Image (cartoon, rainbow, N blue to C red):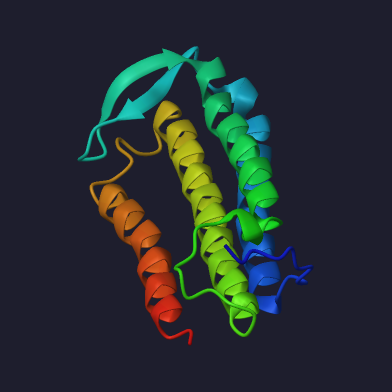
Length: 164
């Protein structure tokens, strides 16, 4: 199967997503660090579909989300640099390979950065609930997660069908 290795520079669109996703994620880590001394020993660490706390745990568990986010950022960043390893339809050829690679990479970039933003939001809400600022993560959170991750995938699939 035709799979050349191309060095395609990041688009402005991808760079903007990286700045937004990475920026929000870093700010959430800074927020956790600033609030660390104020956190009680027991904080919310899991939520049900309605956004209500259904498990409490040690405050050290608030660091799980940032560590998962960092791993995700590294792993998906590596995959972004290797679009020749992604899955493509049989119609991939010399004339459309660049378009397919860019489309696949943009989908991955959006998903990566949306996940960083979602992890940041969860981490911030965990701290806010622990400090008594709010009672739940919100009923709206699960629909936003589902819709927010589905949109880039659907958008990318539609764009992929238009590649000749």
